Image 1 (cartoon, rainbow, N blue to C red):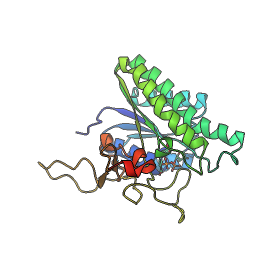
Image 2: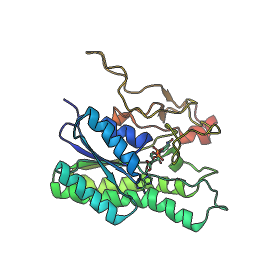
Image 3: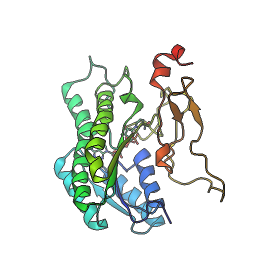
Image 4: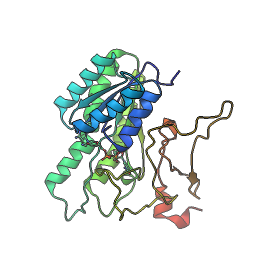
Length: 273
Ligand SMILES: NC(=O)c1ccc[n+]([C@@H]2O[C@H](COP(=O)([O-])OP(=O)(O)OC[C@H]3O[C@@H](n4cnc5c(N)ncnc54)[C@H](O)[C@@H]3O)[C@@H](O)[C@H]2O)c1
């Protein structure tokens, strides 16, 4: 028995890295999953890998999640194929690598459309479906540590990620009466950087444990019966006691994906202890 038996999830940007790992984790836990990506080859490959291990669990769909028409088609296709939608993971993002002086308006618009508006569109049309179904649901919005603090080399991305935090709060309040729970997850430097399928040598690691996390496609050691698995792996606690950083992307236990580094620690380390 998987903890997601009988559920259907949608994972956007599931073609690689974090989204790919989440799609695999859903299937492993018993869910059927819509594998959504702009890149057809990536979506098909991930769905094929999942279906090899879990027959008919994955449906690849090519869609641009910043397009309302594509999002509505994608929602209908998943719901018709699997009989409804229970979970949405709003995972797609793209980034800029510009400061305010260098960033042009068209790139600002593109990053906002793909990283922020896409989360609104997917949540809106999936939530409408969930309300009609009358069986509640879960929406998970992928944020970033970049949304909690400023960065020298990204402008639109950091603004989009900060907006996602408050969009999540509003959605959570508005959808609670329908039994739809909305949360955000804040990863920090997991696998390859956003928009890349390799890790540049120049990538600096700026978190409390000093190394990047890995998206995990496969369960490692099986838990020993009778022994509770540690909920957090390689966890460090900020000396201020207010914020915790879990460094492996613990996809198997969604509640523990509360990753992050302490903004207070980073901005005012002397006041943390
Ligand atoms: N990787 C990290 O270190 C990191 C850190 C903090 C936050 N995050 C967040 O985690 C999420 C996933 O990041 P990632 O690094 O795995 O991303 P990624 O760039 O590796 O993968 C994103 C996927 O989305 C797809 N995609 C891009 N635009 C799309 C569109 N318009 N429609 C549909 N699909 C589209 C791409 O083809 C790609 O397969 C993002 O929201 C990101 O902001 C990642």
